[in-house]
View 1: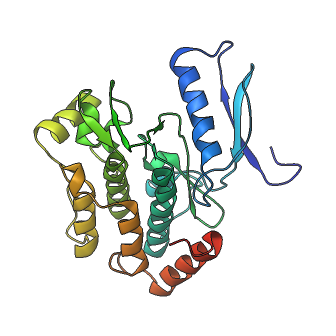
View 2: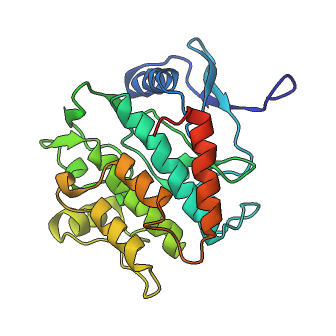
Length: 266
């Protein structure tokens, strides 16, 4: 789609009758995207709630962050400056998600799209949930195992928006190592490693000390010890943390870009 105006992406639900989980996820994505406006979150243009069921959002030309990290064909090759800028964009987008009292619950590199400037767009909000108190009791484990916080595996525990911060820590680790977290492990193995053994992906020797420290805080066992996305964004903005050999002037430029987009909200 794109003959008239900007290109759009069309997500089509291939069912004749929308019901059960498909219906829940479909309307949840529409609710979330219609509630939040942020340059780093995909924009909702329109949707159809009759067959064919579909959602139209803005189109990101460079695919997913996951594809870029793994050097998939036609995916962009990201340098460390671009990775730092992407991290800032995701963090800023997630500030809006949490300010509107949503929890994404499936934040991962495959759900981060990259536009023509390699800026991130957070997508796939079907598993998101709204809570006025930023807290829910999870009835069933949802998400993608390698990116799920330990508390997400337990259907009896209180889940807060800090579960998204854990997932963000995994994304930071992915960009650092350019590998898949818990590669070749099935969800049960991952749950055992993360929940029972309290293991996390291993760091390479070249990991910058401050970045490693931030990642470890993001995936802390105790959600209360994890930083907020406001804290995370400001750490990048003030150059307290970044990927090695990042062009620090580009951090300033990104901060100015965000300030103009949001009228200096932060």
